[in-house]
Length: 182
Image (tube, rainbow, N blue to C red):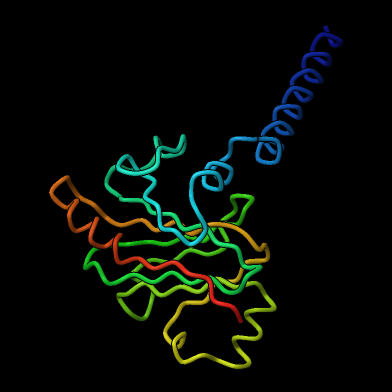
């Protein structure tokens, strides 16, 4: 009886370890992760809508229908990346992802100094240069640091119902994503 219990416990622990290893390895082994979908369907510095009114990504099916979702892909090897957008009057949030799908920074309209979105993404050396010689146009910008040179920014705007769609489209038309050499 003791051997059966021992064998069962060893089997359960072994199965748990195998499942844990598979779960932890999935992001590295997946060929169709969110980054690959964004990389193939979103041009550099081009704001693209990812929810049901925009580019159809597999990940878009799980997005909250109360939000419009916009992504801008960046490459910091050419300089610093910035995204600007006007105030909407409603909730917005922004998140910076690296090319491994990890969140490097996130903020929303409740924690920034102005209602406008003004975000700069830079690598550590670029950030050091910006701090040593500040630029007046970046005085109010929120600075986000990323160790990896490529990634994407996801901006979410509150869209309570279908009647709010024209406001969201106007907001999206005024989003500016660009890379500036240092």
